[in-house]
Amino acid sequence: MQNTSSPDLPALLARHQSNPHALVQILRELQAMHGWLPREAMSHIADSLGLTLAHVQGVAGFYRFLHTQPVGQYRILFSNNITDRMLGNEALMRDLCQRLGITRGQVRADGLVSVELTSCTGLCDQGPALLVNHHHVVTRLTPGRIEHIAALIEAQVPPSQWPPEWSRIDDQIRLTDVKLGTQPSPGQALAAALARGPQSTLDDLKRSKLRGRGGAGYATATKWQLCRNAPGEMHYVVCNADEGEPGTFKDRVLLTSYADSVIEGMTIAALVVGAKRGLIYLRGEYRYLLEHLQAVLQRRREANLLGETIQGQTGFDFDIDIHIGAGAYVCGEESALIESLEGKRGTPRIRPPFPVEHGYLGQPTTVNNVETFCAVTHIALHGGQWWAGIGTPQSTGTKIHSVSGDCERPGIYEYPFGTRIGRILEDCGARNTQAVQVGGPSGVCLSVSEFSRRIGFEDVPTAGAFMVFDRSRDMFTVARNFAHFFAHESCGFCTPCRVGTKLVVQRMEKLQRGDGCAEDVQVLFELDKLMHGTTHCGLGAAACNPLRDTIAKFRPAYERHLQSLHFVPGFDLDAELSQARLATARDDSGAHLENME
Image 1 (cartoon, helix red, strand yellow):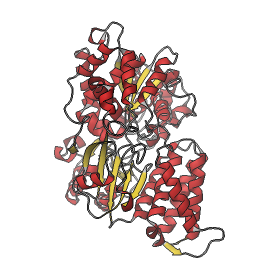
Image 2: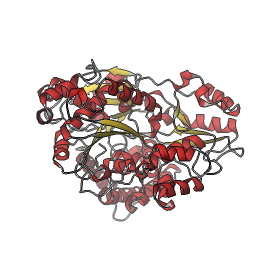
Image 3: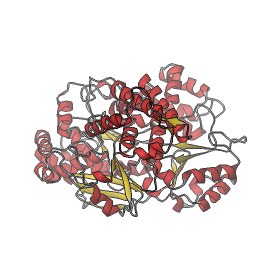
Image 4: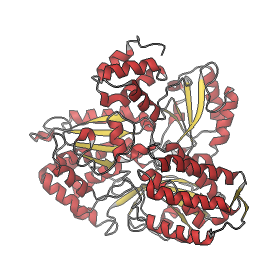
């Protein structure tokens, strides 16, 4: 884009009614048309929305999918999740860079192409994967595909004309239970909720003991009750579809093949809390699902399942908009997500007040995970007592797992809570397993001696990721990858997280080079203690979980990287490991998580 005289920008602003809360969407859509965001365009936007240029630039600079400097006409982003690395993404990226004559992180002199790494793209079960211009997906990369991609880029063939099989994304559902099994007809569960009434539906949800499926496990009925009772001019229902935890892709499958159940759950929530408007916050990496979801919403409007006087119920008016994220893991935290919905940087809020009282636009807002809304639909249809009879007393119902890594059958598995870790490993065809990372990097790493433990809030809580590592893997390398992830995704708001995550990376890189000693391990422990108790939100508090777990449970992996094990005054490695195990046991309760739902 050369100047702001293009007719695109005024039309774009008009479409969003020059609403400053739509800033992220305006920036994202403008960039989709022109490739990047020049200063003069941002200045025009600032004037039109009544904002300062500094504010607009600050928002644009926060999200990794927004660019204030030119990038390649073909912006290639390789998924940098550990499972993609295990499948050889580094060699594939080097090959592509060599064929295109570029260096990673730089734009080629002719402006045609740039290549970079990005965080997990939610395609761990069919990687290595990459994104082109943030929304065109290529899965199952091979050396042959890389050669072909380079040729297509040089020939300037649009990504939409690349071989369609390259963009095939399979659900890979391996094991189903109540949420992934037979689906109700659209409107069936909503009709049951309407017949029951808002209060009785809420009471039944209480009987179900449903807890949020986004990681923190907060009681869904309690959240809805608080939102329902909170005073406000408007109430809102928000679906958190910002599935950014590395190794997690269950919400991608639910949005692809079970969107009606998710949206029906949102509509039932609106009935209970008295909301007129809903919002789906769709992660930027899932931009390719936008048209599909818009079609589902429109179909439901035409069936009188959204809009005014839903199913003939006077006063029951509710509709849903879709907001697309722009690349920020921290926006999985509900208050950061709301900040992003309001067109701001996704910085987590200080709480209280909580979103149920003071959320989107300062109004009462319930934010729930994709899987949670799907569960609500089935509970409304079959009853709370039915749901409470599945799973365990403290962890009712089922949980969907995204299984990836060293196994024969990666994909989606649904189990009742209380299922053994070992059972999941058996079902997915894992062999010679040494470790499982449950719940993603912010979760818990389990060793062989713990495979008899069970999925559940009272034992091993999880947001859904289940990454398998066999004995050929170096668990130090796994922890190092996760350390880079947290440093990359820190929002930068608080010093302990902004600086601490980078210091962790520096020490891990020192160990990787073979220059480390026991003192470096001591520093890592001290950084863990510091961040765990002082960071602004759950990202920083959880950033050292993989580090602590792997040092405690896979000590030889670290010792191989130590130059010497000389004595450090005042430091007892075995004592520190013992303390780490105690901290790990405490954290397994899930209490360390800020609400990632």
